[in-house]
Image 1 (tube, rainbow, N blue to C red):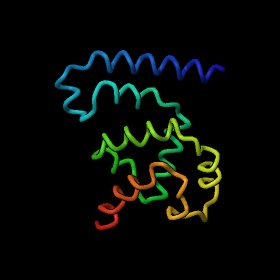
Image 2 (cartoon, helix red, strand yellow):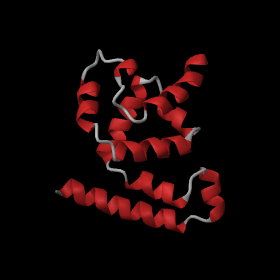
Image 3 (cartoon, one colour):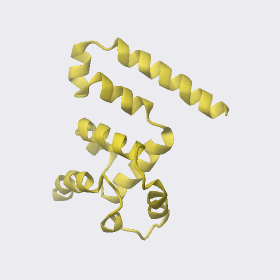
Image 4 (cartoon, rainbow, N blue to C red):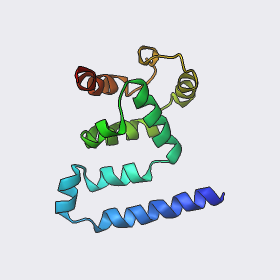
Length: 120
């Protein structure tokens, strides 16, 4: 319960900071105010799940720094995913490969983002 209250307080603080951003600041992030609110409002468990899935595709946090719009889209899709149980089972299996993640609605985008990373 206490953790949930902390998370709510942090979301409100982040929301206030996002609302205070100038248009120039928004332009520098490459995301709309709405997309920033969606990212900031995502539950921590969803962010962790999204990060773990990205790792299975060979992606890192650095990859998303250069693809912020993709990160926001993936996170939004992950937050509303109906395959969370399949995702959890997949992520709990250390032998599962990205090719087996057919249930993931972000699979195609992960594959596209992973191609340039694999070419390096």
